[in-house]
Image (tube, rainbow, N blue to C red; front, side, top):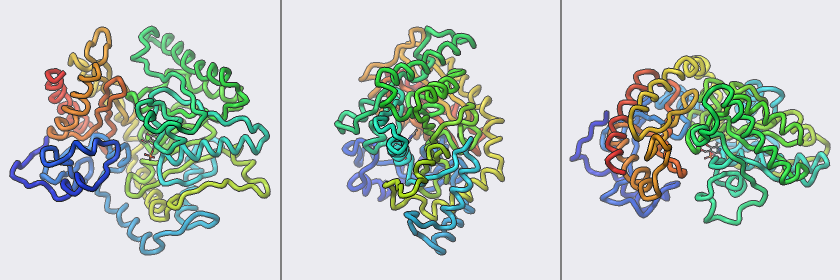
Length: 465
Ligand code: PLP
């Protein structure tokens, strides 16, 4: 666990950040001398070092990003080499060798006929681009009314206005209304919050049918001639690793086909080994029309996102005179693309996908030991992507009130976890979950350490609420 030297003076970055850095999703006014901004100064493998000299286990791979682990010299060297060779040129009617090579590689790795790659700077831009592709696609094929998007409640799909309209988190949206019109929500697949479906195979299959049918219901309610796309994560992050019930995606695929609606697999978190496959849709046995991805593609050694489209979606965009009038200065950045290629090579060489498949069960089993604590209601996940749900009453599954969630999620937990040597994400979406997604190089020793620190902190948390 972490070792702290209390005499270490605050790092100048903490003060500069408190004054000048507009931190993302943070309460800017909360930081100052009494509550310094944590400064992370170094990363090596699964470990981070902070400015006070503490060593912290990275239980979230930065932000579901650092698949290969921190401090990989070979990736840093590829970035430096590409920057020296050609640091920047756009893909606006041109290409660079790394951008073209990465597009080709992703097309080979993607399932089915998803053969065309549109690069973005990150995940939200990929989701935004997916919606624009879907809208223009249906105009080009003579169904111009199709423009709406259906997604799931509590799901997070990014912060641009369009991606925000697809996001299912009212608290995150209310200050920015009006958003792009046309985003509609259906229920997610939170099994823990649907105890009316039995936990056996039959009950879960019934839950899968029920949840998928809510999508068809929404399409029919809105009018199939107005719905362009359904945007779903293979495993929904927000709300805490909501895995799909058996049969869910097969039925969603049928529904999308029946109503000529594009299925978008938002794999911004789930792709690049998080579930032991390049794309999680392959693990779950469905082929979408579009994939959005980002984060793990470069393991964080450069920013990059992508939208991957099927031949069917691409066909009208190849017609004479047709342009997709959309793009980003940083899309397909040569340094990021070169790093992504090296990262995919590294993950293959080190067998990181297989490592996840070999260890996912053990990771879950280790975390499930926490179920003996009164505050732990559920442990769920897949691959190296797990959530621990905290509850006020285990029998009734009652969650905490707003004040308790404030004390727990914004007050006690983040600091206490960091002080105990674990970086991970306590999250409040009405329900309280702790999200865990370590670098894919982690193993049983790290699972044990995560469990031990969580146990230590959660026993204290029971006194806080
Ligand atoms: N989609 C999903 C599923 C995400 O988890 C995220 C970010 O966490 C995004 C989209 C947005 O990605 P970015 O922050 O790179 O814009």
